[in-house]
Image (tube, rainbow, N blue to C red; front, side, top):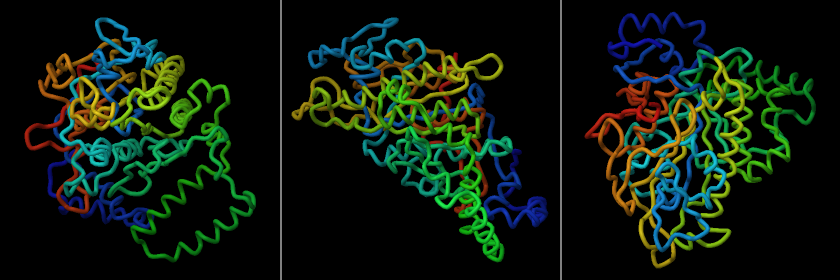
Length: 449
């Protein structure tokens, strides 16, 4: 990818596109334009500290004052067992396994959302912008952009998509205006692996039928919709009848139990396996819902306890396993994998509401681990009750927004977050992370220092 500052189409770019005529049959118009290198970038802080990224979306928005920014009060259940690590209070009884991993985490406690609607902020966190804007309506998932950025580096044996999503339940932003091959491969993790990688009539019969379909497709004129369907077919065919592919989606009953025997835990196992296999996936999104505790937040075996148990077992074991898996250049896979855990926003502070729960609130905490993050600490502070950001704890001296989190992910992966593509259907340029009306996005580099 090269940097330009020229108009979207000029004489040089026209001939670059025209010269792609032979390859044009295999590329959609967006692909051909992308090949011309029509991007613009500004100077940016690009850390390049991670090879993989795992984004865990805590859908429903966990209470920050009961989890990662614990504020102990008369409302705090005794079984939370508040424990202080390096001057930071943590609910060791609620999240016991994560408490043992304390040294791996950095808690960024100065995050703030500017809206309190679940669907809006879940999308916002996946696309790094306001979904109601014109570019927000065509924006791809961060994972799709990561897949695009690393597409040219793929080896021939890397047959898995660059972006894999797990446990989403359909709560997932896909490839937006980008070509379909950058869409997430959305998986429901199952101990038996992927059940649809073999045709019921056998490999030979499937191969014969595929040749017939390809012959029929060869007379179809080049159209974006046809190209996108072909992307899906090609990707699927590359995975079929490949034992290495199906094996990475399988896991043992022992692992399943250790990770918590839940959809989230199973998803963490698959993410671990895919990182170890290095079959092309660079970005993972894993969702974990159940945090919308407007009522009965402390109800035994329900409320906050159920999703907290799943997060505790799944995430703690994922980190433990990655930490002992060899990566490259003497590093572990955890060293090479940035893990980001966050909800849409936080929840109201102090005493519980009339339904014994907590309502939506803007201030919240994001958890970081691996990928060069220096753990064992909290960054930024809130007031004693968790109501306001007291000290942002980073260079920009303001609360951290979803755009800053996205810039941090891109920067850690070696991607310039200021990139502006010139291939969007609106013709106005698509920024990976746009500026707001008051400030530009910036990575939280202090996490890595």
